[in-house]
Image (cartoon, rainbow, N blue to C red; front, top):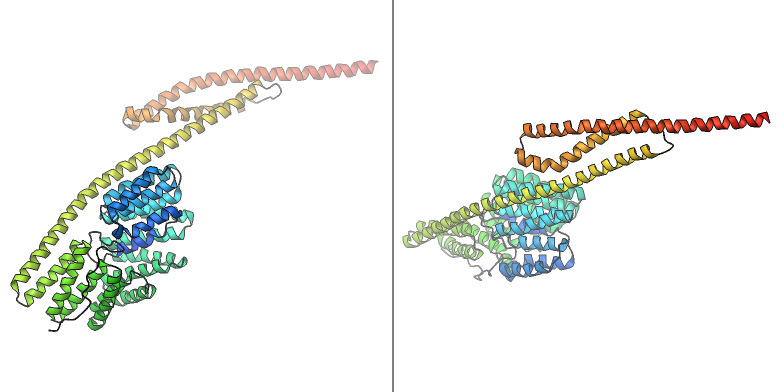
Length: 507
């Protein structure tokens, strides 16, 4: 059968959007995360470095990380350092995300230390994407929700859209397409409110893919067509064309599907988009196989295999190898069929090994994250305790000052009830002050035993109450003596005044 002729040019090494994340093909999340990164507002110098993240394939991940680390050594403990840590962590998003977690966690701690709220939310969003790449979807969603709360407090629509997008992509990669669509709708509304056409196109394309995976082809076609119209001049156009082809193929509109696949190939080659190119070639190969045009199917299957191998995605290469195996089996070319079956099997084994390594890395990163969270909580609790101690000390000082002022004043008469009230207040604050100081030691020595801690506090209270009564009794006695002196002095003045008037009358 006649082989369909297309451009034989090989796709260039690397991909503008670094789509490889170790997941199966059609990884929409790789594109969505890059769109969400554009929401981050930053100073011009840092923005240029973040821009280099998008061009990382041509620059090289290791060289990019090394250059950013050199900048990090010179940067102070301020917002610029936070943004650099985010950028370094983000550069590991698609390769070694467990390494990226370490940097972004440092950025999160620094953001909280210097009260950089927007930086904290940005770190949380990047942590959500990094955890997604490690298949740790629950933790990824948790981080995005924390970021969402902060961005809502700041009324930052860019950040809100970015957080919703992160939640949606986690659900999508997990295979929960219905939940993913729920948050894509929220992302879409936020993107429309800020008129971000490029982000909106990426969102609608992802929504189309979700509907395709759910088998709702009419809805899938609607959103993917909307995405194409928004991405006419976008480097993501090739992937959208591939998805349009897949939707029409699912509708059995093979000629229309083939037209979309062919339209996407030049766009993918122009943008060195191996991810889209692999999907386009694989789609065409599958169509020709259904039509029993095995020579053409083999031709495009080999192209898909090359694109998948250059992409570095074992899943994509395994898919291409398997379709080549089926084609050669149909044409009774057993040697070639066995060759590609073996290739597909070995590639899948490699993918399984990578998944096992990823799970190990995930366990390590989860433990590191847990320890960092514990340390952060400990520092936060210590800071709060320090503030409470200061407030309690201040309250004791104010109450003591009031009592001393009333005790030493020569003209103010005070009722004993007020003294008792202030005394009780001082007792309560003093008890709380002592509790705040000794609580960490008490918790340590009693192993947080409620019975032992309560017993210790009762003993402290039993010691304070008699002391309080003695001080209160002494203050009241002094107040009574002072009140008598003030009243006696006032009476003497009145008598002297009356006597003075009487003498004047006698005269």
